[in-house]
Image (cartoon, rainbow, N blue to C red; front, side, top):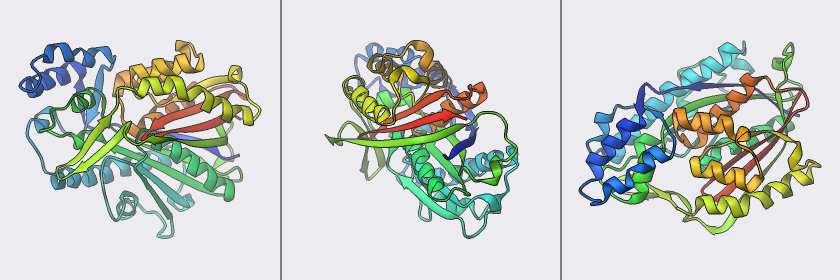
Length: 356
């Protein structure tokens, strides 16, 4: 089975504490919400302590055009994405010519040619690398990228592929949007970049690696009908406007467990066999909904909560920050893990893993 060989992350330059973000939001939203002090506790109650952005807080105090924001997205995506790729390959002694395909996951900016094509002008990849940009899966995109990379490496077992996930959510911020959804988004979303190396089971890159790595056993994608208004973007003249339903935690509680059980039982795995839960932490309430729906204790979501506290919700990127924590844990041979992420659609992406 294909293996996840490495995950490397790249952190944007500006660290903003949640206290600073709440103060900024109070100044910006106070004229639109007379009860702003009643709403501001969402910044503290979400238990996020800090987040990272490509611009400082002063930049967000003024309106910016869609073109300006998207131009910045392309610039920073290429810069940070190149660093993440270089770190992933150099730290694992992998040559650029060893990479057959790049899956680029993103929902927070637009680029044609896509970001990995631009990065190929910066880094010495073969011109024959296959490019597979995937746009629009939001928070579920990271797990979906793992799934698509698994399928590629299963078809071509000697191959090595990269999953490059880039989300600069701060550049979608709408200065003139005074909706509660925008206020919630201001308290939650952040920027981040990750590069993940997935290898087929006959890849030469895996030779000599003795520590257990997660093998991908199977994956499942599921989309709930008539749920397009649960989360996502509305695309308007000024750019991307966040759609964020308050019903998401309830959907997780009621919909996720039957979905997970159907998937893992079809592979001969019971819930009690899951030792590691590699979850995209959509927010504190989503993590709590995971625990309630799947019967997991707090220890199962410890890594997800840690990443949420330190980095916020980086959309598709976040699950890779969580996965990196598990790789650093050096899980035991034979341990079963479940990766899970939820996104627009309303959809779920599930990944069944075993450390080998």
